[in-house]
Figure 1 (cartoon, rainbow over the protein chains, first blue to last red):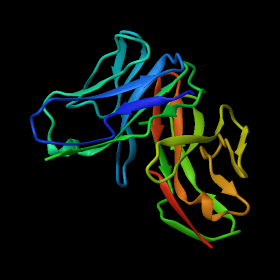
Figure 2 (figure 1 turned 135 degrees about the vertical axis):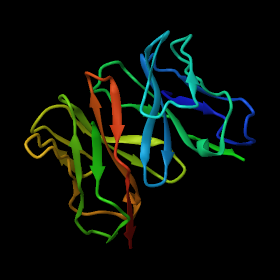
Figure 3 (figure 1 turned 90 degrees about the horizontal axis):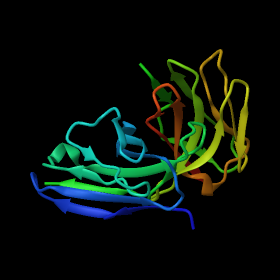
Figure 4 (figure 1 turned 60 degrees about the vertical axis):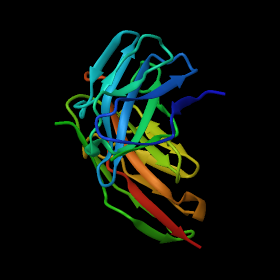
Length: 113
Length: 112
């Protein structure tokens, strides 16, 4: 089954404690991205990756890091989380062509206290 | 800058009513356009898409036409069902930036 898998689905943690949200896809997609969803703001792109070892900033990259060492995985790293990063996060993947739709994971709800 | 603007919700309709959710965009370049739907507790799912002017995307009774002259991609359905209750997102992809841009989402509530 084609899918994008995110872990964890829920996490409550404290300010400053490094965390990683994993994302894995099994569709051999080149393009992967991370979004955060906040009420009234919709989805905003954090980072995206065109392929292995190729990453670039989205609209709201501050406070986040990513890596793309393998085609299937695209982890999101919060080195020093802060309360304003409390949000619902989605990972998505698609073929490189821009007219191909994205496949989304089920989301990760992060609460930073 | 590049952006997508959707009508604010929530939109509340009775079953079998006609639905329109407005979406307009600003883009430097020639985007592909999408509508995604998000059911409670789930990720987004593609509903329909259009890749060039005057294309009509359609799926599950929903339709949207790519209007380049008005930079719009309004979502319509002739007769909504309770099961259509969800949040709908309009989005665009810009090839020259390799980025997706999403609207803020419109929540639809359909009452029996």
